[in-house]
Length: 186
Image (cartoon, rainbow, N blue to C red; front, top):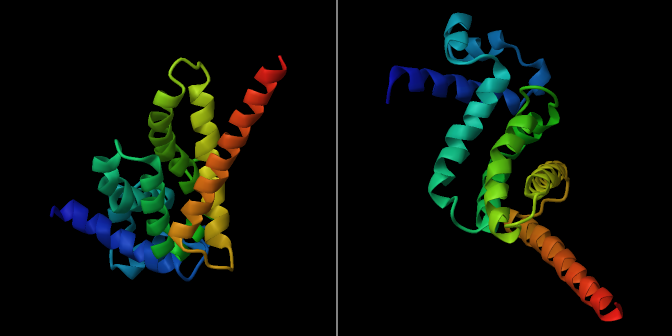
């Protein structure tokens, strides 16, 4: 492991520890560096800001680990993601509360969009609206995950994904049946 990676990891662990106790908006760079005995200069050498650090945490702990799974079922990826979020629940509840430019919410959509798009490419081969569908579902999944993580009632990741899958497939089934009925009437 390089010195740079060790430094980034130390900053990440400090941020994770702080986010278990404090809202992200209240955490200052000085809090992060103080916790791991570093300087602000060290922090800014590796990260633009605390949002960049949170995004790096997600990338190194989750995104890098699913690279070899991208060709597999989208449901399996979503389940893995939900398991990861569930294991790091408080950290991501905190991270997802922040909105706006450079926020984790925005970064999460940037990561999810190509994954969902690749799942939709085969389904909507000749449809010029595939980009819209992928964006719609990336937003829907982010909102659903955010709500699920913030709920007081703890639903397991497996149950949560099962519920999403039932909602999506149930809706798709109903739409197909409705289209068949309309064709019969025409």
